Every structure is written in structure tokens, then in C-alpha cells.
Length: 304
Ligand SMILES: Cc1ncc(COP(=O)(O)O)c(C=O)c1O
Image (cartoon, rainbow, N blue to C red; front, top):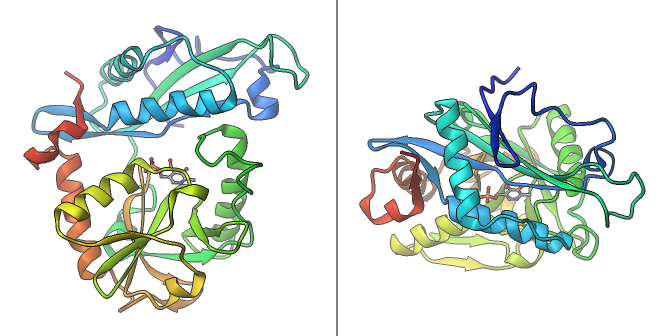
């Protein structure tokens, strides 16, 4: 079981036992919660949260898309993240804020249901494995599509949306792959169960446009870093076979960080190992999050 010393609950740091919720919690039944996934890294100046403000902004936007607004400001929630990291003595790992509908009615009408907010954090290594980060992973195009944009709100990290990702991930793992690549309702490449996707062809980076995907904070960071490194980036519609013939493919996300893809649907990608552009960008990414590149220190929220 993941060890949690303290959980931030509605403004207070409490023990895991004190943070227990009721069986009739609305979110447990209907997925009426929004969440974030954030990483904290060890840096020479102590633990630092990567792009804390951007994550909190997306958290607030998710709730807004859901049609509600939280009674907390961005500054209060960034402080809450830092307080949670400090209270747990976390050096590097994952932070999970969740705003969930709790008690106030068991029907679908959410009008009188109270919203509570919790934040937990824990030590978490490479989501797709250290070996995957180094040598690349194997992916499968999922038989599950991303929800149509008027059904699942793709810009909201809403818990209810994630049954789709969980089924895709489960299918990929049962088939012996590491991760699922999902197509959108028009059949174009969209994203993975919890990551955005890039391909490299003739030294140019391509990634699907924002309309049908979660606007990944890692994706945006890598676009900016690539531009700074004079690597051209194009946000374009991508087909499944464009992935097959790419020189390189990689996934990115807070949990997965930057993970190369060496095989898709039993087809080797490029040389079947992480390519030169992926490796260059990956090194830069890890240097940035660990506070080694002065230019990008603005992306770090130091905890102390
Ligand atoms: C469906 C999906 N796509 C992409 C991402 C990557 O987003 P980020 O880089 O902000 O973590 C995530 C993770 O949050 C996700 O759940």
C-alpha cells in the first residue's frame, strides 16, 4: 500500500484515517470529481513542484467545465500543494489533488452536493518503468476510442472520463503491451490512456492538435523546449500509419515523463530503439525538471 503520512483535506493536514470518506460519496458512484497529476522533483535547492501554477489552473478549469467553481484561489491551492509535500517529507514523487462531490443527494442532480478537496502525495518512480524510459516501450492501438468531444470533455481531467483510459490500459496490458494509443472519433491519432504523443519524421516533430486531446502540460513544455532547441514542431492531424513509418515516437505526461516508443502493433519504430531527437529532448527534459537548466527555473515551484 502507498504510504501517506498526511493528506490535505479541505484546508487541514490530517492522517489517512481521518481522511476517510462516506460510501454514499456522489463521486464514487458517478465519477463527479476532477483531479490533477503533478510531479515534484529533487533539485539542488530541495524539492520543487514542476509547473504547479499551470496544474492548478487546469484543475480550476476542469471544475469550471464541470459547471462549478471551487472556493479556493490558485495561490491558496499552490500553497496547499507545497504544504502537503512538506508534511510528507517528500523529496520526489507524485501529487494528486482531487475535488470530489461528496454528500447532499444520491440522484444525478448535483445541485446540493457538497464539494470537498483532498491532496495526497507519495514517492513514485517511472510510471512506464525505468527500462521503458531508457530503451522504449511497446504500444498497441486501442480498440477503445477517445470519447466524442461532446460526450467526454477532453479539456477536463474529470474522474468519470477515465473509465475509457482504464479500459484501454487494461486491454493493452492484457495483450502484453505497455501502453494504449487511442484514436479519436474520426479515426485519427489522439493520445494515450494518460499521455500525449509525438512522432519524429525527417527531424521534424509532429503532435496531434489540441481539439480532441487533454492539453498536456508536459506536451506544452516539450514544444517550447524543442522550439528553443531549434527543432521544428508541427501540430497536425496524424494517422495510425504515420506512426508506423515515423523515425521516432515518444509519449509524454506527468506520470510517464518522456518515454520513447520502440514498437507499435508489432511494427518496429525507426531502429527499434530511442532515436537521437527523442534522446536529446529527453535529456533536456530531465535536466529541466531537476533544476539544472537556469533558463527554465521559472517552471519550478520550490517547496522550501
Ligand atoms: C488523457 C491524458 N492525456 C495526456 C496527459 C498528459 O498531461 P500532462 O502532461 O499535463 O500530465 C494526461 C495526464 O494528465 C492524460 O490523462
